[in-house]
Length: 183
Image (cartoon, rainbow, N blue to C red; front, side):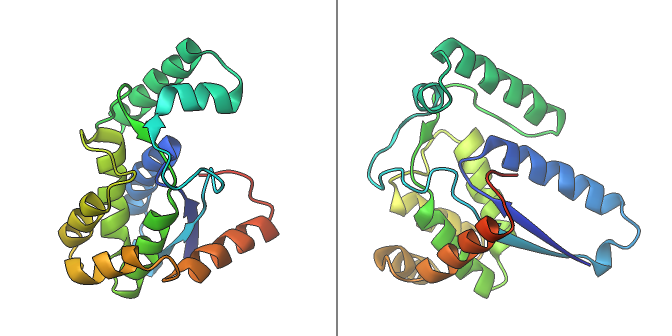
């Protein structure tokens, strides 16, 4: 069985959903017959690449809610994350463009390390103290921690065309099947 998962590193429900899916898969008697394929989906594909800012005001603006409501949503997600055994910082996180992370994930996929990298990116974004946005050095460190060659990861990030077509192909396919959000 093939399971395709479209997700975005900026999506907290994708972070929680990945943990829930992995728990369910571990209990599935035929788990060894399941192929999980991660696909790219940007929640904010038009978000400026160099624009990094606090997540709460950006969420409030995007969804037309108050910052207090956005913060309450963050606390709710944090409670759901905790129920899955995940750390979650409901305050002080950044938001930004995830396109380069998706390119890096395609690179990792070619080397059989996509699941490791996506897990590290989620953990860094939602539980870490250092932003994953606008910090290529941090992304390279995470790639190396996932078992990838740091110089190769750095080269991918330095060339905006590498794996760009693969990311856009995933996004076109998601649109073709009617996906408008993730997870």
